[in-house]
Structure formats: C-alpha cells, structure tokens
Length: 309
Image (tube, rainbow, N blue to C red):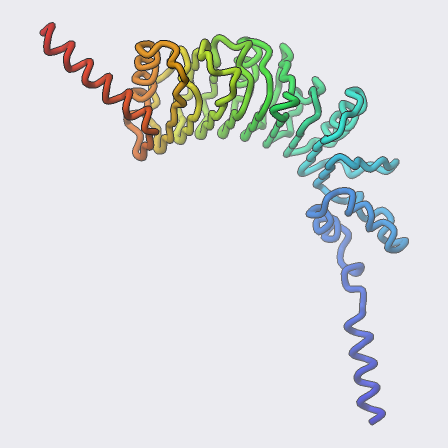
C-alpha cells in the first residue's frame, strides 16, 4: 500500500515538472513568437527566469494595445505587424515603425497607420511588405525620390491612395527582385498611367473596383516579361500596353461593366487589347462581360475584313 502511494507521489512530481522552463532560451523565444506580442510580454510575470525571455522573440505582433517597455527585442526581427484601429499621433506611430525597421525585419505588416516613415523605403532587409489602409481611412502612399528595397520579393498594397504617376513608377522599378505584387481596393484618382515595371515579377493581382476608378481615365502599362500568373478584377482602363505577356501560365480576368457604359467602342478596344496580350495563357478564365466583348470584336474584325478585302 505504501509503495503504491509512493509511486503515485513520484508520478505526480514528474508530471508537474516545469519542462518548458528547462528548454533552451532560443526555443522558448521561438514558441513565444507565435503569440500576440502583448501576451508574450505577459509571460514575464511567471517567474524571475521568464522576466526577460520574451525579448528573444523574432516576431512582433502589435494590435492596437501597444505595450510600452524599456527593454527592446534583439537586433534582428523576423516579422513585425502593427494594426492601429484607434487614432494615434503620427509622430508616435513613426517612432514605433522606425524602431522596428532598425531591427532589420524580414517581414513588415502595417495596417491603418495613416502614413509611413521615410526609413521604410530604405530598408534593405525586407522580403515581405504589406501596407493596408481601410476604405474609410486610406493609407497615403507618398514615395520618396530615393528608394532601396533590394531584397523585397512580396509586396501587398491595399486601400492606399497614390500621389502621382512618377511615385508609382519609382516604387515598382526600385524593387529589382520583386516576384509577387498585389494591388487591391486602391484609389487611382491621381493616376493617369499605372506603370508596373518589374522584370522578375511572376504573380500579379489587381482588384481595385472602387468608385474612384469608375471613370477609367488611367492607362495600365505592364513591363513584366517574366509574368506567369495574373488576376485582374476592375473597371476597364483607358488602355493597356507594355511587353507581350507570352509567358503567362494562368490568367483570371474579370472586367467590371459600368452603368451607363462610358464609351462602348473605346471600352471594347481596350478589353480586346488586354485579352490579346494574355491569349497564350495555358489556363484562361474570362468573365461573361469579357467574353461578350471579345466575341463582338472578333465579329467586327471579320466584317471589316470581308467588306474591305
């Protein structure tokens, strides 16, 4: 009887052993990186040993309730995310972002912060950059003259307002190794030519069907010789040009029809021009409106050939 109680006591002591605290500090930091930063910092109250363990995390994830601490994380960051649902002083937000940038992050995800510090465009460590506003609070994308995003491969911009044509060209052309670009719900009212010049781009998504783009006064230029995957969902632009997209593997195209149609003839020509550029795609999906216009243009060209030749 005594031996059974002893075994139970030994089992209780073993099963209640603090095995997590005995793990290497680097491994604990890796585990804490998967928690929201506020919760990771909260583990500092567990014991004296845990007081500063959170400083070894490589992913900072701040969602509004920003934690103000005197101890900073280690020099290099894997990922930093900041989402501000409230209204904060611009200077304070810039300090938070600039501090993260000084830690050489590989991935940066900024949402609802209003504006961006200039240091962002000189961050050579960034591989992934996500910039998001909201339909009610657009992010001001003012691009400086000098940009150096030499490591950036993935760029996502959502609900931002572009300043002018030149700033957009500078942004894309300065990302020399950019492979994946997504532009969604953006305001193009200041843009006359949306020029994407990215020689290494492989995947492109454009989904900007907002009321500011209904006029379709802008032109889209694609200088993307290595593009393989394109998804387009927007109103018809004034025109489409650039290099031939002969390397397209997958194309998903959905033109949004305006009511009333601005200029049916010009819209038809623009759509036909774009569809012709991606006609060699191995997998092609066209919306009903796109197919309708393409067929009408085919009939029109046939009749022109028949009557004049």
